[in-house]
Length: 433
Image 1 (tube, rainbow, N blue to C red):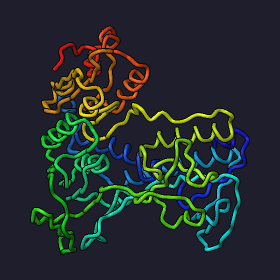
Image 2 (image 1 turned 180 degrees about the vertical axis):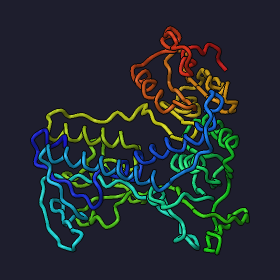
Image 3 (image 1 turned 45 degrees about the vertical axis):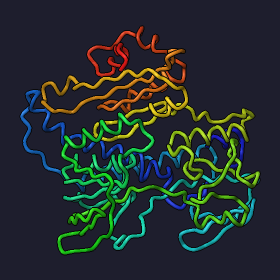
Image 4 (image 1 turned 45 degrees about the horizontal axis):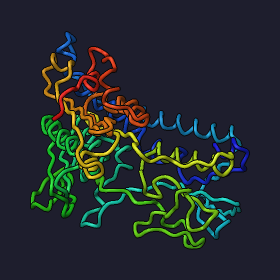
């Protein structure tokens, strides 16, 4: 769309619904499910505030229908945006014939070819299930968004943000959830304080989390699915969801026909300008396996469009990208982990606090909020903000602005807190740990 507004002739080849993973089987429906899952807590907590709430019942099918309708609405918005910008939409599976030719195979089997001076690969990634006995009985996040019934017993396999989020979603809706991860501690790449704090919160919530554990095999039985784990535990569940990673969706694209090079994992190799090994072919987003976040892919696409057609050459700044995990409670993070900061800067100052939010002084819920600042001891610059709490996903956006602007701890300290909020703790932490 941005390229078209710059005056370029543009076509988009799409074999599925417009909007990609994020809109259809990613961020958007996941956030809607997270909202819905929270009501399980809210109905209970309302009693502490004087509300007499009848025991709630769940109509899962009604929720899924509402979610699907919202996604269809967004699909229509994306189509209108492209149509209004003059972008031609080509429905079908695209593959490269050569460096300037794309073949489109439509759903009815008809094939057409198009030539272009420039070609952009933005096909994203795709979840995969490890090769174990009974793998066909498992699902991925793709299918989880369209389950006809809420599973009473769910086994979530994986330790990344998708696994953590779905464990919270299913638990919030009332499923008995077990989450297993093959490593020592989940959410690799996040600050250790966040990782351990969230584990404590999931334990308190009643989610059974097992580390150093994996699935050995799956078997269909009369009562559901029998899962045998590597610790020899045998459990029976209604749903096994693997969230053990995603791979760039490059298989079948014909990249070898054009000479586009990929790494061992199938990711397209690009330079800083997002050029592949073929000068007129570019790639952005999850398919290059750099920072696999929707806003990063959007920024990459916008920069490329401005560079090629807008007369404004620029590149994406990948430093200090704020992000969130919509676990229960949320995680918000921006900047390096403590380990990364110490490796780069040596000694750093740590400010950290945990507390029960004001809301839960009445509900009696033991949920705790964590806030952590990492500060350079010489420059006083705030290097990172790490949060775990109800609104962490919202708060971290402006914390990211502050870090980008080079804010110091003194700036934080001189800012008047908004009272009474949890966020004010970020500007009232005075003691180093």
